[in-house]
Image (tube, rainbow, N blue to C red; front, side, top):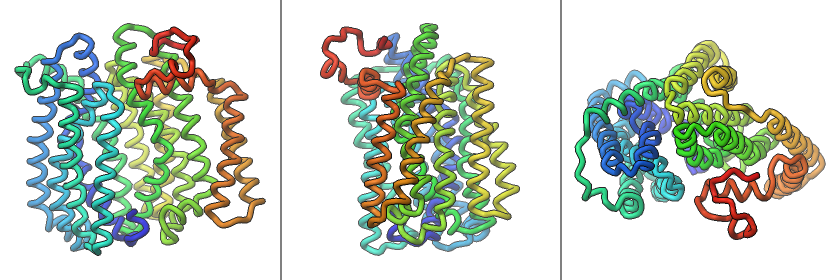
Length: 485
C-alpha cells in the first residue's frame, strides 16, 4: 500500500524511525515474553492457573514500566535525533507518536506470546492479522485524505490499541475465563525462574534486534532514506515465503516443550523433520517465483519506482529459507530449556552481519546490505547445525531435503523456459507460468514421495487443531497427535 502512493524516501523515513524505536524493544521485554511460550505449556499441563496468571502479569508489569521509561526518553531526545541522525524535520512527530506506540506494543507482545503458550492458532494469528487489517484501513484513509507521512505514527498507535483491546477480551472469554477471579501473588521463585530463563533469551533478542535493524541504521547514515525504502520493501516482499513457517513454528514450539519434558526423542525427531519438510515444500515455490519474476512482481505489487530493488529482491529470496531453518532450531533450543544456544546462534549472525555491513554498505550501498544478510545467515546455519550435533542430536532427513531440491529445480527450469516462450500481458503471463510450473512442482513432490495425502491431513490437524482426518480418513482410528505410520 505504501509503495503505490508514497515516495520511496517517505517509506524509508517511516521505517527508519520505526526501526529506531523498536530497536529498544529487547530491553523493554527482558526476554520475558518469549519465556511465556516455555512456561505456560508446562503450567497448563499441571493445571497451575495461578502460576500462568503470575507469569503473564510479571511480564506485563516489566513491559509497561520499562516501556514508559523509554517513551519519556524518546520524547526528551526527539529534537536531537531529528537534527543529528534522521536529518529530516518530518521525523519529529513520527518519533513522538511511535514513542507512545512503543508502550502499548509491549502489552500486545505479552498477549501475542500468551496465545502461543496456550496453543490457540486462531487467536495467535488473528491478533497479528487484525493489527494489519486495521492499520491498512487507517493507512488508506490517511493516504486518500492526503495526510502527510509525518502523522502516520497515529495509524500504528490506534491500530495496536484497538487490536489489543479486542483480543484481550477474547483471551479472557475463550482461554482464561477465571483470569480476573484467580487471586495470585508473583512469587520470588517464579520471578527467579523466569528471569534465569529470559536473560539468555534477552541477550539473543538484543543480538537479533541489532541484526534486523543495523542494516537500516547503516543505510540511513551512509546512503540515505531512499535506500532504506528499497531495502525494507524488498525484505517485506521476500518475507512472503515464511507465512506458512509462522504457522508451523506456532504449533511446533509447545509440542517441542512437551516432547522434551517426556523425553520422547523419537517423536521429537519425527515432528521436527515434518515441520522442516512442509515449511520448504510450501515456501520454496514462493522463493523461486521471486527469483524468476523479480521485476514483474515489483511492478505489479508495488510500482515502477521500486524496480531498482529487483536485484536485492532476487538475493533476499534466498535469505528466508535459511532464516526458517535456523529459526526452527533456535525454537528447538528454547523448547529444550537451552536458551543460551539460541542466543549464541543469534550472536553469530549479528557479528558476521555487522562486519560485512561495515565493509560493504559504504561502498556498495543497498546491494552490500543484502549480501551481508545472506552471508551472515548462511554462516549461522553451519553454526546451528554444529550446536545441534553437539547438544540436541536431532536427526535431519537429508534424503528428503535433496528430493525437495530436485522438485524445486524442476520448478525453476520450467518457469524460466515458459517465461522465455510465452509473450502475454505481464499479469496473465505471470499467472500462466506459475500455474504450469506450480503443477510440475506439485506433481514432483508427490512422485518423489516428499509428501502424501495422509501426511497433509496430519499437518492440517496440527496447525488448525481440527480433526481433518476424520473427514477424509475415517478408517484411521489413531489419535490426532500420534505419528502416522
